[in-house]
Length: 248
Image 1 (spheres, rainbow, N blue to C red):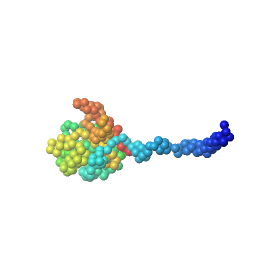
Image 2 (cartoon, rainbow, N blue to C red):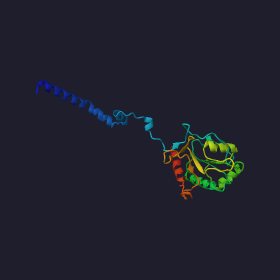
Image 3 (cartoon, rainbow, N blue to C red):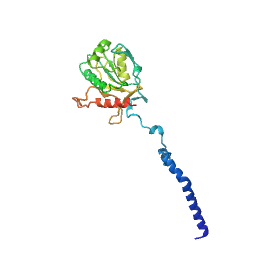
Image 4 (cartoon, one colour):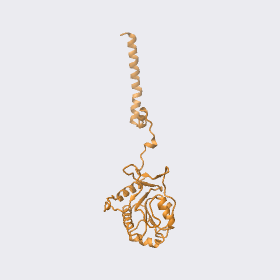
């Protein structure tokens, strides 16, 4: 081998040694100080990480999206069982369940109200939980009547308001505001519950197809487990989702 070649190898070896002396300690120091992270790794692979999208949401509950916008509870103002005016703003900062009922309902309403009492008791220590119950027979369900009904069902949560007001406003709130069916002629109504987050948005978990469930069955109790048609109770799911939103 020629002296020239030997000099070349010596030169290359010197450069490699110099690189190791200068740069390897710096790389080790970066690793120890956690300066090399997922972003560096992703960039080396040609992947761009969007920090905003990579953040996990506080819960896995969906929004009800209408025309590309998350649906928010519309403004309302009614009178509760204590004669107090209650608006949608009174519920801001609270996670709350919504239902539509009437006090003389002989079928599903007693079961719905019993389930709501059970939910109330589950979150009795949390001041950020509430319930909004709207009467679809407001001419009969005066504040005095609602107060007796509340006492009969053990309503103790100060954020559980049973409300009455103008019939047309309540029916519009039900059918349009919450998309919960109420028949304006025969007092037929859905036994569903809606769930609202602290900022006033309608929320729910996803169904088996990846779509928001939107509502929770309010008639079947946890003890019953299923109804006569084989539909499973959803009170347990609702309790779980309330807890999730309370932690957001």
